[in-house]
Length: 523
Ligand code: G4P
Image (tube, rainbow, N blue to C red; front, side, top):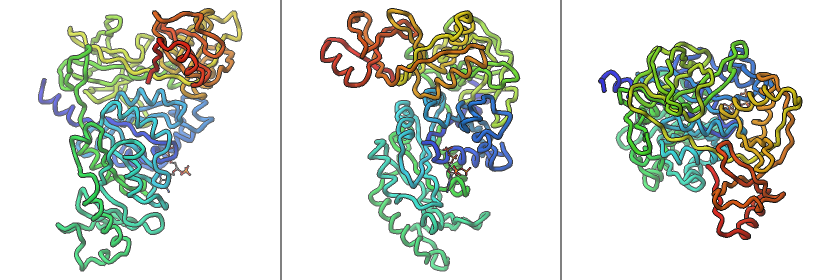
């Protein structure tokens, strides 16, 4: 390992933002990009989200719906660190893609609307992040509006998510009466509606303002002081070890829209968030992020990002070594050698050629069909295989056929590619072999249909099967006679059998009838 590589890896901070739609993820991302100098004015990311931003409008659906259905990567320098923000689709129907993106980050930022508290989508995404055991930072947003009492919000973290919250700062007033933040981490007050360095008032060792400071008499500040006393006595104490494992989350308050508290948050985040860590490879070995040999894994494949250049990009999370243009690697699954000539890294609005990338960075490789989700690639002689990415159990199912029977070829090609990309999951009826698609949300089907028509010139017919509970069964225990109209028997793309139960009641009925049969679900 060279000192140069170690230095570079230690500068990386790679994270994703998780939140319920409308909590303010886009707004806070935009503020961060402004601090990073990537964009020059607020509204750029927002415009993209609402569909007015031509260069990243790669899909009509995205425009029509005004939502971001694809994850992208944003990279910038901040305070000597190289930040990679992995964007996650805002729409809950795309959570499958989001889940996989969360496998490629070293930390997560959870944005919560302080008026609403923890909402369903946050809870779902939190579950995935928690399983990874990575640090989670919380930003309680929209402080400029009347919100829930901060103590309640912190208590809710523990009650609903089972994670300890430790306050890094505390609001002084809220909504109409918002006056500032009491910054416990930096021992200062940060005033709202005040520009430049004047907005900071240093606190003394006892955490008080000097009596000569007029703000010390402010009634909201007085209230905050009593709350601070309470949390110092009864609140959780900052514990770096717990934070590293995701058992405690540092909590910051602020208002992304008025750009209040975001800079303070980002500065602390950059200091506290971890540099890329080692990975477990080859079913048990530890691979250090500073290992000299290049390796990485594909966590996302996206076709036709730009309709004018029919391309397919495999997103690689670099896990070790250094990526250089023209690097020769091996694809672990097939042992096929590949020269990495054509790679891009991602700035928020444009793609640029990668010069070098190290652990923590994301590289986009132009792909001619070599890669699958979860693939590992490595340079050198030692084989490196990353653990498989988790699969998520779909909840919605449709039967699918080609409208025009003469066009089977394009139908199969499109289907194969979109399944490989992880856009949708494919099953076949155990007896008849007919195609059944599974998704986490309805929108995935619509995007599938649209892309089949636009990219593969294949009109598809879909008949809904509706919500189903998918449970896998050990092939040795399977008797096809167990299947009936309420528990459809299908096989997945690895030929493993599973039942699609009409509802939980049907599943329970089945279990009562066949108590010896073990049913399993994915994440
Ligand atoms: P998302 O990506 O998590 O879905 O949320 P987004 O940032 O798009 O924010 C959702 C709405 O909340 C937006 O308003 C945004 O302006 C607003 N918002 C974000 N942060 C704050 C904040 O700190 N305070 C307040 N008061 N509002 C905030 P919108 O009306 O949906 O859109 P627009 O009219 O601003 O375009």
